[in-house]
Length: 351
Image (cartoon, rainbow, N blue to C red; front, side, top):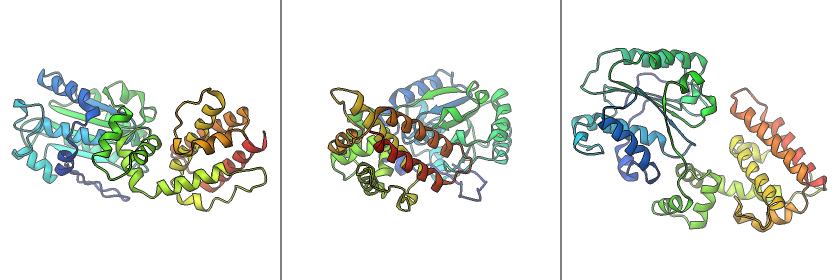
């Protein structure tokens, strides 16, 4: 899979990793319904000109889109419901040089610029180099700025013949309504907990409890859990949890140098989970399963120091902080975290 443009921040050349697709057996167990739906639409010659794959990050939507692209272009797919992996088209995709495919991708901190979308538009208007679809993939679609979305709109309103656009998005709220209304949505959701734990357990050398914790920290998304387990965050999470839950009225909690080393969005997400666990303990009797179940006793003990109204106020403050981070507007992270720690101390003081 190929694109000629490179971002200043990252090389955006993309190719299908055939070994990865084979290793995880796309469609994944939690993607079977979506795969069957789209394959049947293709077989019945009823595939729309624009698809929007929606769902939380870490569910394998991009892998799904790449695999479906390969299925559509495979020379043998008419005899089966999967790509063969060995025909000329499949080999071109494996090498990253299929002339009928173009993809724009970005990191989640990077924006997709209007020039990149205009290049896609030119690609869609050209004649196909090989028989079959011309396929355009955009990931993550919510990273298009307003000018980019407007540039794409004409292609959605006046689609070229035998062209398929596949948009992949994690956050529907950041997509303009003009884009949403012109795409057929395919929704993805996290697998059942046991299915996800078993699937990861077959592929990773971690204890079941570690995998369960990782999935809870990742909203049940298996690939997000893989990233979580392979990074340094599990140990940092342990330290941060102990730091939060050891707070008392005589302890200064505004020393945040250590926590500035962690992704702010990840840190705030963990903090939100702690607050939700405390709200569950305070309000629900008997206590149901907690997100941070490995800190069950510490959370129960800490909840006895908290006032319900103060917890809800802090819950709202965290929501505002997360929205600021996701907005893309420059934020002074130090000041934001200092404010959160000061308010957290008040949660305990106001008992």
